[in-house]
Amino acid sequence: MSPLDPELLDVPEAAAIRDWATERGILILAHSYQDGFLQEAAHFVGDSLELARKAAETRPETICFCGVHFMAETASILCPEAEVFVPDLEAGCSLADSCRAEDLARYQAHLERKLGRRPVTVAYVNCSAAVKALSDVICTSGNARAVIDSIPEDEPILFVPDRHLGGWLNETTGRRMVLWNGACEVHELFSVETLRELQAAHPGAITVSHPECPKPVRDASDYVLGTAGMLKLARETSGRTFLVGTEGNMLYRLRKEAPQNEYVAAPGASCACNLCPHMQRNTPEKLWECLNRRAPRIEVDPEHARGARRALERMLAIV
Ligand code: 13P
Ligand code: SF4
Image (cartoon, rainbow, N blue to C red; front, top):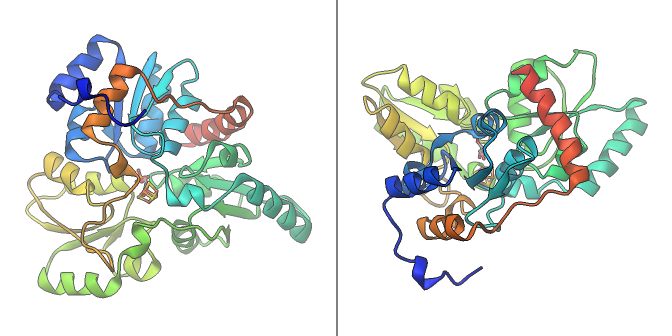
């Protein structure tokens, strides 16, 4: 599909793109980690859970998903009759890549032999459809506590793929889940040293960090919240400064929807931008081309889709 079609390089304003899509029955969804233009062009902006719910409830004929591959795949699984397009098929996720279905199947069998029973597999939504299909239930950063709490205390749990989110859940629920050794390449780079310096420079500021951050960063934060939780807290707060430990584009959404506060990005260890390179693959030009060409399209293996839908629907029934 590349290079871009020269006739499509003249990209309209974000609001005009949204209207253009509305006229053609296309629902544009965008994650809060997309840049400001893509957020403005979308009909709906949300966290992973909100976007999954929106797809499941709205049941549009066509979705253009501005996010990363696993998110668009989830929309397609929950909305099987919809055609789901993405600006860039290569927009992946380091967490999803850290857990291959064949490795998970082997590890599940190993644990079953070791424990004498099959553990409940809980998968963070940042994983492939094939991994979701091997899992009993899915969770997102917005509902992970509730999903874990819904599992009887005596059931052993294998949590995949994020070791930091899993570690935070073990701390906050008192469970002793076995954790897969995956991590997000963006959140893993937040450093507690630079966060402490920022806190010293902004006395009285509220520090919020995503549960994908390493433990020292989480421990130095006032709140550990997914992106929807951060937005809720910001909307309910006034006249404060927030130090924000998550992907950099979240600040666009916070500033737009809760402008009564100030927001400062907590810098990563090696760079201050904190942008997810996968989310950044989506650009206004690629969005416009994708809408016009109705491509590239997300295709999910039907076998994987069936198993993944069961695990996703179990999650949606909990919260
Ligand atoms: P949310 O679950 O908060 O939407 O975050 C998704 C994600 O990719 C975090 O890195
Ligand atoms: Fe994946 Fe991390 Fe990017 Fe989220 S921020 S999509 S977890 S690589």
